[in-house]
Image (cartoon, rainbow, N blue to C red; front, side, top):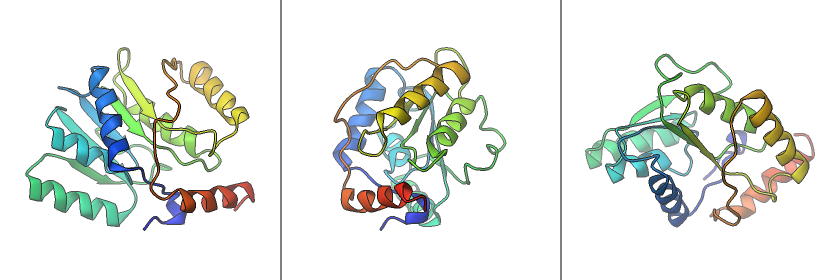
Length: 187
């Protein structure tokens, strides 16, 4: 079950696979170093299981998820770096400027999107790298989208290349709706 304090909402297995297929199609998976920031969707484990990436690392705060991923990766014999980390703190040693791509489905909490995306961008090697993230108009208003786009382009110096509508399906949408209400109430 998701923890409200971590603002978790997870997607269907089909969505996880579609996300990986998109990354593979864009050339951002095979032979690449991939960082997953917050992983209640198990993207890191799924990516490692494909055998395509050179390296997969996950930064996750929830010990239930890190324990599960460690056991599953060991059981399946795949290499997966799992680092218990709070993204409100600086990136751990060896993470900054070390990855070809990152994936995150950032929380909608005030500042959460910027925090997760800035950490992902900080982890990238530079030109020719990519970041993938989810954002919906259900979770965020178009005003917040505009502010986030402005931040990414002007402050981070990145370009948004794709917006894919209706790409992700969430399993626990009812739970997500209650967390959105909490955010709107300022809790």
